[in-house]
Image 1 (cartoon, rainbow, N blue to C red):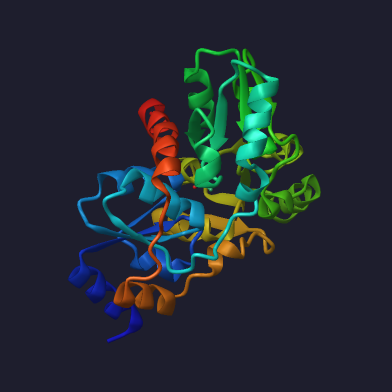
Image 2 (cartoon, rainbow, N blue to C red):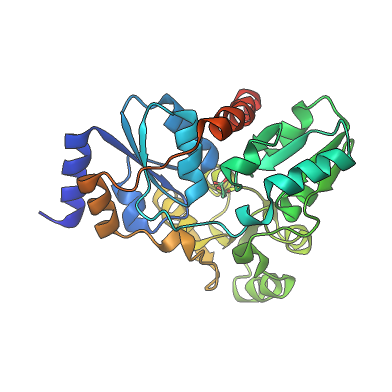
Length: 300
Ligand code: CIZ
């Protein structure tokens, strides 16, 4: 049996559901029962009938699954797969921002730690950030940790005031893209349309033809025959599967090292040995769950 076949055999034997993020390596996505963005993975983790969930992604995604399904065993093959963006917003800085802007709700991007989510009013993903902000009754909203996503939401929801916390938070992978990259891509691929992720800088967003989450890209890249994709390269795999006759170009540097840690061997060992179980203390999970479930309720 190949390693992949062993993984599927063990998953069936142990009654485990494998969830993989759109940025995972292609071979991991192909072994998963469910692939998707954070919103999709959170929804499916909540609804899952299986007693064990294996989350192939970065740590906050496994924490989110555990918070939504505290009765289930949630495993992550490489718990050290962190998110540098998540580390840019601490519970203390959320409390300080709320003290400075009394009455303003804090919308926290799911790319944040459970402890930080516990201090916030509602979570969002890049797929639903504008809908979440629109659903709030308040006119002034604190938003973090991604300042580029905050600026994107501000453009879509101009009637509200969005205050980014911190003012310069961002994802190192998406920060690498520049307007120069777009100009070069337009020269190299004159027939291609350019779509970027809202974690890219505002300048890159404004220079692109479309802006959206990975879920948005998967829904909308059927409209043209050639694309330049400005987000983590892992998304090319599900795009190519969904649109086999379309040409997709990724940028060479678009690799999140944390998203690429999990190997087939790691997944095999995780299923065989039941490691590494994710734990979130109840005192944090109970408060973070309120913020995540509030998001799921307002998401279309
Ligand atoms: O929302 C997510 O899962 C992330 C991190 C990106 C995306 O657009 O899918």
